[in-house]
Length: 117
Ligand SMILES: [Zn+2]
Image (cartoon, rainbow, N blue to C red; front, side):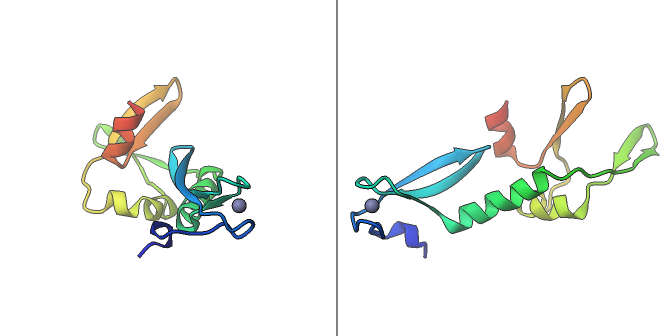
């Protein structure tokens, strides 16, 4: 049960809030917007998920490269795998592409690369 699915009154002016959403760096964050005083309430679970992402995003990981046959192997830190856990479970392949002269991007979710490309 999600509280946002029920009618919620603004705690500043008691007007009925409208359900909406905003997009932050690809994250859909559900909101309740007050039509009277324009106060915006963010869904706590969406904010939590976004904060987790921001914390990881601002972190640099130094990882080792190993040669295995004709390929390089890169270990992905546990923190990152944990973050993508719901996407990476039972997954044997990910999409990888070159995004710049010195940048490789990995896509854990099909949805992300459908939107991105
Ligand atoms: Zn209000």
